[in-house]
Image (cartoon, rainbow, N blue to C red; front, side, top):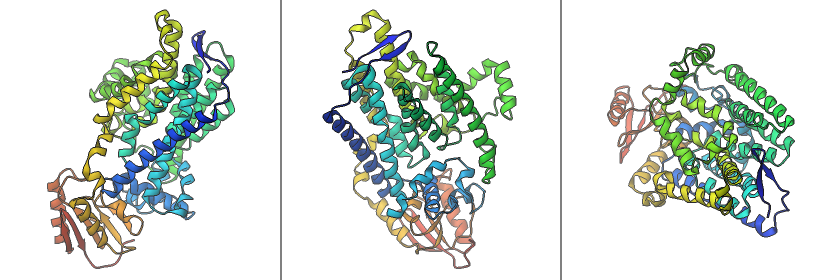
Length: 496
């Protein structure tokens, strides 16, 4: 078994023997088990009408377009956000890597395909996490650290928010770090290049990784590579955010969320440099930002704070926490923390290795202890995050609400244009042209509304009921009502 020691402030790694057949089988079983858990949970949510048009149908429509060798158009995104029905999602986020999923739609056309693909991609990150940990702390710790990643609450929350391009990030970011650590610099660079195709701000991960490599004072090659990563990351982020998305019909300022620092990047940068206390104030306002960061690092026992590898995630984390416009960016209950969790687990492992090498008392710690502690902490978090819903009988057995939703969806004819309530859109997207039911009439012949509970994008049930009354006044006729689901129809020409 390979052992790792601290050498000159960094982990020195002894050569690792080829993994045994039993170890490879155990690792494959972990990946398969993780994919099965993620896939089962996601498909149960889909069947129970807990998924949403925003964002599952957005990606479904885009990748269906890719599968037909067309631009990745998402009607639901374009119409709801005012870009028009022919809007390509590359104008929203630069995520061309999603085209890799298009061939799967030749096998099965529908959102379930995306959910299963995401399950596999998230589970595959177990492999680089295991390899990185094994080199430092041995196989037993590697199983625990990989299990801690697999059960981590950021991954669970990503699953609870349907499908996103984040599915590719834990695998690619962990490969970038692990392959570089293993001396496979070319493979690490390939993973970094693939990250740039995931989302327009993934260059910030490369900037952070470059910052980390710059700390490797005993390696001139690493410092040079760090400079290259940082420059490429900065340039790619600027080009993708300011040029490419606009070229595909997007608004380059759509996601500008830093008005508390300045109206644009140059003004915000100058303000941040001349008023650093304002930056500190933004980072802590509202306090939920601090809580979210604490929730990420505390289950890792603050070990990432000991490792310079944590620098890798700091630019991406700052992008979220310096924003004062989009509250979902700093909340824990979305997919954003899944962008950084794999690297932070690796940083925790590196931090534990450094502590064992530098603190005399810590040298007697069993090598498995840090990994076991991380796994135990992630298991303790399970009841407080999204996996708790696995204990909900309504997730496993269809209830009256789900049966009513299915009956309402069945009233929509194949090929029809329908404005659908957020929770019903995924059930219609394979056979109908789905728009999001919102405050504005889109002229669709069919509307499937929901008035029993608050539904995105409405602020309240009262608003939803008022909207149904307005549709009736516009000439729509009610053809179905059950358990809060209302189907309305108005004959007339299809606007698109």
